[in-house]
Length: 80
Image (tube, rainbow, N blue to C red; front, side, top):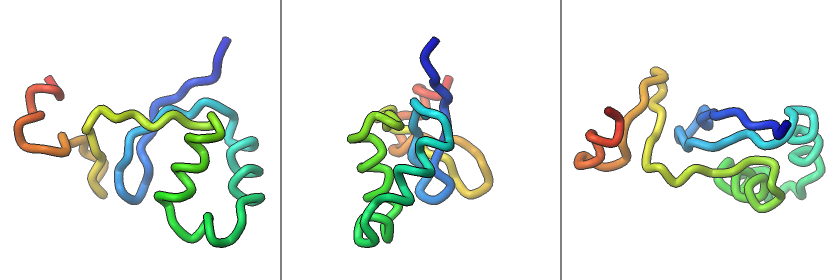
């Protein structure tokens, strides 16, 4: 059975699917060069490219309070 878990990035609220165990993801991030670890965007991009996560382009974001919002006003119907 494949490993899949739906999550949101704590900062930025990007929706993604976790495709590998946390230990594998942490090891990968620790081994990234410093210039790729200084940006959450870059880390998410590298994890996505490596197949450890799958960024969901569903236009849904999570705010700091943990509430889901569409990325544009006309997408409110997507949440229902």
